[in-house]
Length: 334
Image (tube, rainbow, N blue to C red; front, top):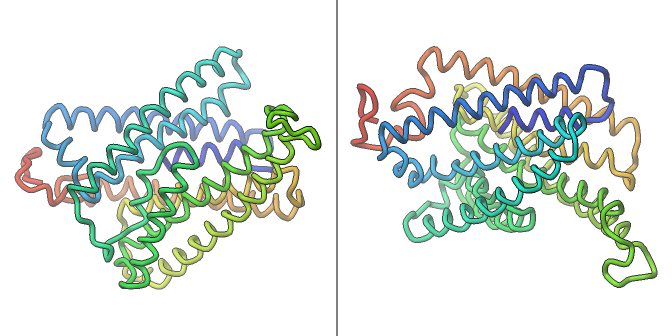
């Protein structure tokens, strides 16, 4: 998800220069390679040890991250449009339209049945609530945002009634930045494109152009939610800094990238919106955020490779599946 999100940010960030799109395409290619490799690994794991698949989907932590797979596909579709459409014919747009609606149908089923399973079969304590519970709400923007709001309430209650997560888990707090950031980006983007795709009298209103009204509503609604995302970003940042001396590397560190990319995309869409201030300082700030995002991706990627080589992550008994008792994998019992 993080690699695909960085590719999207690079493609849409202001202050473009020669070669920037090439850098974005490199991130997109890396994203495709990682997606295929990880899909192959997960498939082989399920074939060799079928019990692992069911245990993974039912795990109260690992199962909730299954939505990340579908988010990764959404980002690939987005990147195909951003990087592929300009250099190909209209056939790619038609293909992406078909792929998109197939994706919508599949993810809607996933969103329904995942929560249907957790409601009667899992008892997740509020004291252990993490913003990763939001990831399952990957669907059309309205459904995703509404379900996310419900999870936000549980998460804030957890922060108010219990202590902060342990320092190694605090990077996961950045997941709370993502839903609001991506929702803001979606609303502003849909709004700014409305005048070109919505007829002026679409809603039987002749006094003003319907598309322009939707544009104004989208930009203002997105701006409203964007600050909400920034608020969670600041809370997460202060929480991480307060426990930075006790932090160790975990896969939670990738939450530094993907959710923050949502905030960055929201800021980019606001900067590009015709109804916004459209000022150079805003563009400069967004460009700085893009550079910082790429730097963080490089740091986390290097730390991940180092941790895998040292056997600290992605090894039996080291990740979310460490308490799947009795399911053998390799020489160990995870």
